[in-house]
Length: 277
Image (tube, rainbow, N blue to C red):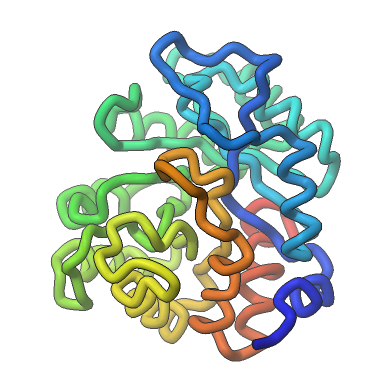
């Protein structure tokens, strides 16, 4: 097996496109729970060094709701190597979007899972508003819902980034309605998918997560220009022992054996989407 750290470190500005910071200096929502694992900027930078990554996209945790202070602080600590994805309510004025853009935010997060405060009805209007700032919609949802939501997603005024290989629940394959809908979205040229968190919805499980891996390989074969890599550190919804991040990153080498395509996914695509390259 190749030395993943060494191979990644050769790629200037390889990017982790989805992770979270939980800092005890910033109060969470009353009903939220911090992950069992420490997740400060210092903790993450140790991991980033271990993986050989140079850039990061800090994604606002729903534990902080629309208070983006923790994420903004983390981005500031990591400087120009960091960009962010915010949670912003429809009541926020454009001046707030301008402020967040200046601080490095490049996406608006929607987590359409039970207990999350986002509403589908706000998405088209918010997409129109954030498009003028060059943001995208960062969407996490049960993959089976993509089929029903695809007509709306196709009409959004900005690009949409789908988390965690679509977050389907096994069993699924290329003929599943949600998977087919995801592929159609990718064909529009305005959809991206994160190769991350293969444990979500997997029945085959570690170390290879063959069910999610089959979808990942199909994505790599057909849409390498629309894919991103992410760790999903510190894996906040994983109960018990956390996955080995290096082992998860090693899956990228299994799914993407071609070095040029890996560079596209790790460097070129995130540079274009988040860093204005």
